[in-house]
Length: 118
Length: 114
Image 1 (cartoon, rainbow over the protein chains, first blue to last red):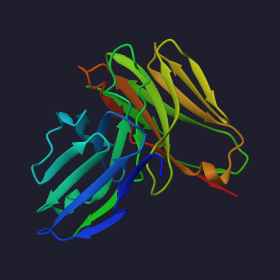
Image 2 (cartoon, rainbow over the protein chains, first blue to last red):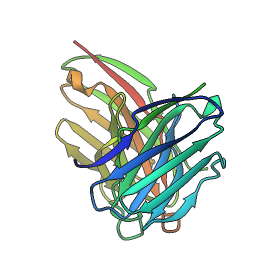
Image 3 (cartoon, chains in turn blue, red):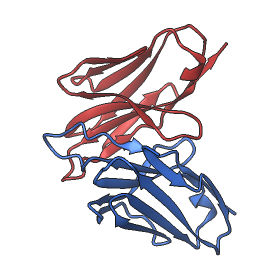
Image 4 (cartoon, rainbow over the protein chains, first blue to last red):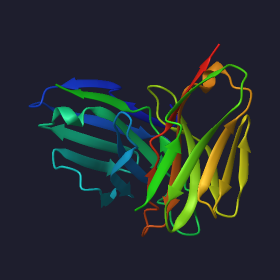
């Protein structure tokens, strides 16, 4: 299997449930990202990991908890979500973080998990 | 405020026709501009990446232009095909510490009809 994979592809959960989204990249990349994509809105960066260390947390509510056990895997643990959290959650990876002098650090996206919170 | 604005919001064209999508940005300091294609139910896929010194780049039937002075970019699709139906997202990268922050536009939804 190649590229960036995400499971599950679809998830429906109640507000009191606990679930986890999984992302796996088979590209040998060092950086991984979680994005939220809501209808008619730009992608919102949630978390950035580089070499398994969280380097950015964009004011995301604590009901979203990321975990990066190794450079190939990224999880997003969900608990007590709200209906407005319903969205497409996209995982991405890049060789490294974008740094000056290496602007073409392209991000490769997974297919996303369509989350519906009832 | 760093922003990326795309127009039109949606577009319907007939198969075989050409079309041009617009992107205006107010992002500083600018690093590069990317166009992504996102099929329904899939993640975005990169089409082109341009730095400020590049004013045009092609990828098959897709041609992107960049005017760094006016801070505008366009994506021209030639001889459209049904498979071009997708959302096209303009993304501008700025130098922000060591994470190279990406600013996303809201996308243009293109529908190609037979």
